[in-house]
Length: 246
Image: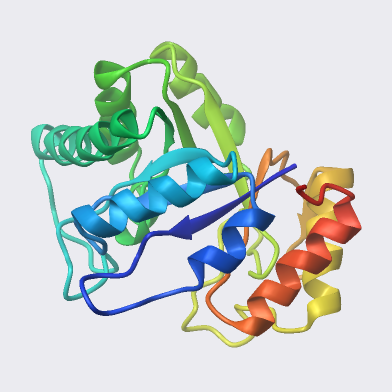
């Protein structure tokens, strides 16, 4: 089970997250590409940090929404979706090349990610954009009870999927994340977070908020590192999974 984290989300003089602390603890870095956060200098520094810790680099594209941090839905045509993904992945790929690295996967951010999980047409546009750009790139997307259908869509395009799970979020009976607007949508108990991480790693699933067992075969676990509590949770997950990085 690989740990991934959204990083490089600072902007100019404004700092978000504790990238230098969390990078040594993870396997995969989802690097913001300038549309919801980041700028060329932040992208350069984040890639440099990832390379120094042998962390796999992924692009984290979003709707063009700096003011809303990419969390607001913005209607796009299929052509516009392709272009915004090409633009952001290409920018990060250029910076990676200068560091002797490469982008290896794409993980849509925020509202773009949420929207594609509710709209198969949008998901197909995202997949088409990645496949057209470079089929060697994988798509990282949330694992749900529809994972087999999503895998079939990816197979049709020659894409590989990285199915992602969350240790600190509640799941509904369809395997979707419970909205943050709902009570108890986010887990704060460190023991519960670790138990959920172990459940995904060892039993390929999670218990939904109604108590139903869901088979969700994830291959990567999203963690957060923006405060001391979240960093402690990442360390605990590493210890529990027995995959602490050197």
